[in-house]
Image (tube, rainbow, N blue to C red; front, side, top):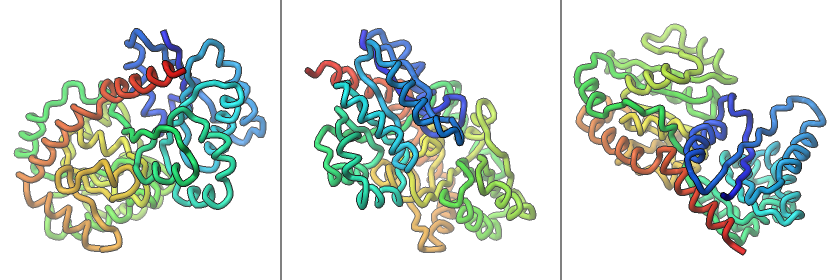
Length: 356
């Protein structure tokens, strides 16, 4: 049985990487040819010894490990921390792969200007790199990586959609009095929360039956709450999880996430799985994954009325919402559930381990 060590953040905390591996680890546990062990790193706060503790933790966990999976984002903290992991692994002739989840475009420019040498001596030694966008693949090639690059997806926790019926959702759409627009993400300006609120306000004048539910917390939470306290039918929920999250997804009709920058947000995949058309932007992994007009609509935030018009199309046309939502549900079941993603990754991992 091949043994794989996966670096992860604290799996009990919210975040894209922890959500990804919380969904996949149960799927790997039932595979007979792989043993995948998570190694939690980070979370040291301002402790100056934190990076050294992480290095020691990784090196002391490598006994009888066939492959290490590093899970950084392209940002200052994890770029250097995980880059040092990669250097240590390369020096010890250890096989490792890298899965870049987040991708900070401003930090990308810094790498291009100042840190290509560090990249070549660390991440570029990986057997394979997984990214969420072809744009990221192009940048890795520019920085000198010559190995295999795979375009991956994030995933949906299998248990989340257990018991969900697209037929029941369609019946609910036909019988529901109000139409619920959902925004579910960290509440930071870059996720497009204020653009979503602005579009909702304009549409509320013509469609009094719409409501906007905002789920998530973050640095803008207090400002958003203050901004919307007098808005009719804007509901602030804070962070949601478990059954509350599932109920929210089941009862929502259109999903909005007009981000300025992204990897491939799990919330978009979850909305698709629950039969919702999606309003989003052509950034990061979404640019190549998302099928405009089939899965919902891309919007151009530079054109102030574009998002209003696209939302209006979905609000006013029930048949279109049902058609797109049904397609999204089927696509998610066939491609994005944790068992499907785990199977694809397992094939890649086994192939790497078997290479001389």
